[in-house]
Image (cartoon, rainbow, N blue to C red):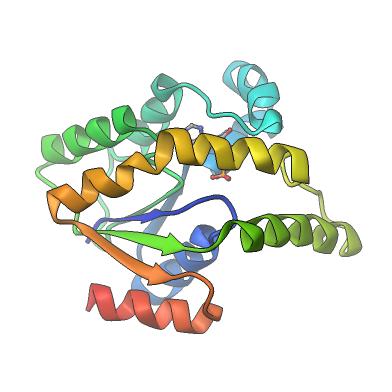
Length: 191
Ligand code: AMP
């Protein structure tokens, strides 16, 4: 089973993806994590995207499609969770093609709905909690980058809601509920 978790920054995509990895033997493919890894290991690509990520803008389709294509080379019986990818219509088309080339299908696109005030609050709190725990704070988890991230989401990513609705793949969950309740709603969708 291959699924997309779709939603704005701070909607809880990563948290739910990790639950699905534990519970269903799925593989989480987070382009954000892959890009952060490229940055911390200091690859040429990592250095190139650093400033873009810190500002809260999207990196090019070419880069993220390349990262995903590499990960999709192997097969995995439990299936893939796309977390933070696709984020543009170009990426969505590319993913459809990559899956079709493998003879695989997209089984569900789960939209996690959270209001904007809560998103900003969650992201700012995530930074405060990381700081208090002595963990590294994401450079883009601040109110200013968050505004850009939200703007990028509404301009470039939210059209995917209509795109997947029209394809018949879209399901929505209330991302304001507790982590376990959201998990249960996703479970009910996936069966
Ligand atoms: P995330 O961890 O998903 O919030 O991603 C952090 C940052 O990585 C984003 O703000 C973008 O700069 C970049 N990024 C992650 N995934 C993508 C993507 N699919 N397309 C473009 N940029 C991305």
